[in-house]
Amino acid sequence: MLFHGTDGDGGAVDLCRVNKKELRRQRPRMQMIFQDPHSSLNPRMTVGDIVGEPLKVNRIGTSSQRIGRVTELLESVGMRRHDMRRYPHSFSGGQRQRIGIARALALRPELLIADEPVSALDVSVQGQILNLLAELREQFNLSYIFVAHNLSVVEHISTRVAVMYLGRIVETTDAESLYRTPRHPYTESLLSAVPLADPRAQRKRKRIRLEGDVPSPADPPPGCHFHPRCRYARDLCRTQAPPLRELTPGTQCACHLAEELELQGTL
Image 1: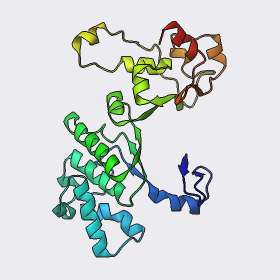
Image 2 (image 1 turned 30 degrees about the horizontal axis):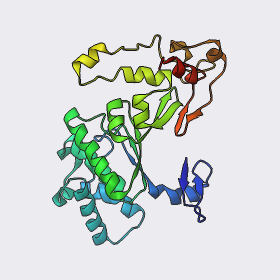
Image 3 (image 1 turned 90 degrees about the horizontal axis):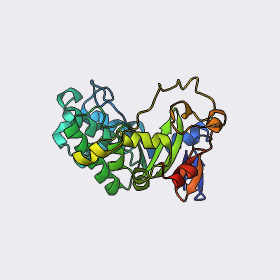
Image 4 (image 1 turned 135 degrees about the horizontal axis):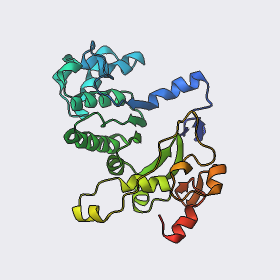
């Protein structure tokens, strides 16, 4: 993982290679939004203490300054000042997730890693949190790494998408291109399962059902990991792992047959 402009010369820093001291210096720039808003908040701490803890740990500001900052953070996610004195159990799931987002923003990060942040919420609340994340992205100039299984959510929130299968990226491109013209057979099958709002279009659509079970990541099949479930697989796919290569500017795909399938109009 690379961060740009942090090595003093405007270059990139590889976070996988830096020492512990440098990694500790970079950590405030990256924060996490957790999947479960119920278990990710300490039930023995007030909301004010939860949101203010990153400031206290990093010794930022005086006590009164931290209170002012916590107030600003809560208001930025749609909460109120007097919520600081309450405990997590008195809030709904959506409100708890807002508290978690406020905590993640405390150190003014540049990157938020959101681990399925709406999957544990009611559908009616999911839209509110997604809209909040979109607003905060513009307000604080944030970047997100948004991990999700719900492709409708991914389409709503993402500008670029990376599709993974068995721990490997098999396709990455901008969101519009991915949903319009998928290049990998696994992406094709995923998108065929997304329900459409138009009943007539849904009835005409061809659903691609994958055969077999997902292999164990601890013992993946040889060659392309997807080949046991791929309807286009050939002998080459069973013996050689395809590299993630650029097909067009901004689009990468790990499939031996990507160009051929596109020319045939199969995908």
